[in-house]
Length: 494
Image 1 (cartoon, rainbow, N blue to C red):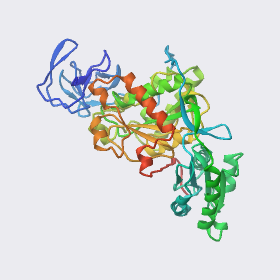
Image 2 (cartoon, one colour):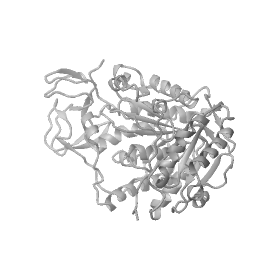
Image 3 (tube, rainbow, N blue to C red):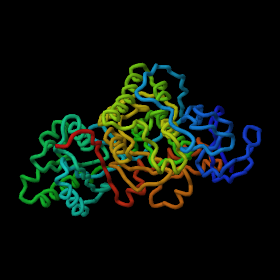
Image 4 (cartoon, rainbow, N blue to C red):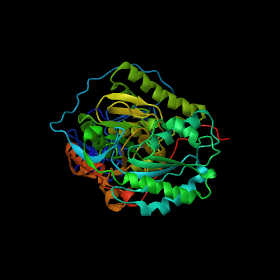
């Protein structure tokens, strides 16, 4: 096992793949280097002298500036480097040549073909409240309805949330869009929409957002108008179950898959192991004709030009510029620092600046061209790689991916997390120690890259794993019975 990695030929730092002791002698590019300090796993050390205010290069790009002189062999982290990013920027379109992956054979998974032409990878019944006031009613119906799970039904799950009333403007609009997106999601064979009756986003309003619907699939209950909302809700769920239980899995081309890409609790290995593996998977799925969605816009800051220059045309480039600058303006409008990132856990794992984090984060997008740019709550329309406007928060961003149509979310992590989302959420570890320690959380390990596993081989393994999940294999959070959702709160609460 190589004890370190120099990611790009132009890099001024290397990354320790295991903890390295002070005074260790390393051979890099044919020259001996003696470490001046102990270097924790995932952390960086200088390959050359770096002067104060000089750019620090990793991934072949700047990840920040030296706060003071840094000498060859020194530990490079938050104590001696800082972000080099500015505020809202002007950009120019400089498209880069892209070589797409090709495949010989088309692949299939066992999924559910819906009557409206959509495809699902689960056959669940969802209970979605229109307002937070009835969350407990939704969860009680969920609990008592488990006896209706039969046939091909995978689960019956409620999705409580605190919104749907006392919101204004775009904030309320976003809640309605997300709820409507989930109500229409093809992973749900049937949905009970549970309303209160006096809320802003009441059932009649929500019907306008849902559009045409199959009344065998979607049922509505306004609890203020029911003498016994629990019994009435159970009766409706049983009717839905009778319909949903008849669906059967059948072979469906992988070109129909839509996969969300997300990371959280990243460490210094995330951009070397897990994220590039997901990028390899993304390129493979897109070669099949499938679709991936990359989100968490604040974690594109510092790597955004790489995505902009992969835009298929200038119109998409301009949309990506707005995606980035609109999110920066969101920070500014709330008097917040744009680059208040990375988190304490990221720093402990070896990430020193937002550029460092972003350049690792965007590895998940692979090398395919950007073919779509989505607003928050906007369903995906274009096959290939899409960018989605959503924050970095794990639950909010993963819910946004599901709302835009993702059947499955791939979630890379160096620290671990048990959360779920409305769709199967595959936890992918950047290091094997995490995988071995938290096997009740982690589904797939990418730490083997540190020991010489090839990125191409691991990408193919992940592709086959996703096919299995799409065909019904439960991920760890599903086995635990977890279903979560979170809506992006952006405005005033009355």
